[in-house]
Length: 450
Image (cartoon, one colour):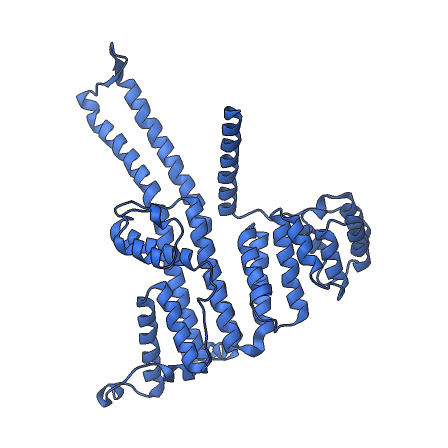
């Protein structure tokens, strides 16, 4: 039985194509950091509830055991038999308060840890696709060391794993520089990962803050300040030695987006460098990633990656996939509320290559009468825009609310539309609620001043 399982396992491994190694690695990384982002508001909500409940219990106890004096100050007289209860209530409240500070820090620690694991797997993928990379490593062996290994493959595996370990010991910035040097040496062509990477200061700061949480309980050190200044981290002059850093939802959002962006860009650049004949698959993977971000409400992050896809990466893939990326970029701007940028993007491209693209342009330009005509023309049997697509795709989010859409849907599918909007991620909803409260407070402050 074991022999059969080993044979099947080996056969499955042999079926995996090189591009699938990149695809699987980036998809796993995104899944893991999405899990962190989704867990934060859930755990944060439970902790907030715990703090409120413990606070109520403590306040109720204090109220029941207090009295006023002539100075209107509250005095508390705790009966001796109630003193243990008071200590327990106070301790429960302090623990819940501490958890509110500590646990969000661990989400940053976990975020950085998942990136480290991702980088290691991505590095191993390079060696698997290009085994000759191992021969460019600076490693010398004595004859006695070589004799420890059964064959050259075993020695090579050891060398690779040691190199992965050494890479992970470096700072995040130095890790990228090591990769640059390795690939430049292998290809004999200058290769860069850090040039024009605007998110780099944030990426570096998050890693340094993680180090503070792990080693210094969040207390700012001179090393943290020096590294942040070296990499141009914003507002670092406002941070002083012995300040205590914490993690609020907006900070985690910034960290999440930074690591997501660097992780995706790193994989995409290496994919295109080592598998130049698989550009279309890389483009498709990137488009799928960005589409999922749009579905889940991460419009800013989607815009960043779609600009990278359409404005920074060389145009080497098919025009059809590229135009899908451009449409999704326009869609991300549209759903974020920037309609002028949407129109500008659409006007910069020729979308006459297919009726589906024409429909997308009409919808995003809010020419709903034209969109209705095109929807009817496409009909019920289109592979891209079937009934489910019209009900669920974010492209039709606004169009779905119009009479033109409802009439076209009924004419094409012979039934009334049932809208199936995907809910935003819980972390996105948390950020939306925070921003809403801030706007309400700002509006109230403006009213008070007037």
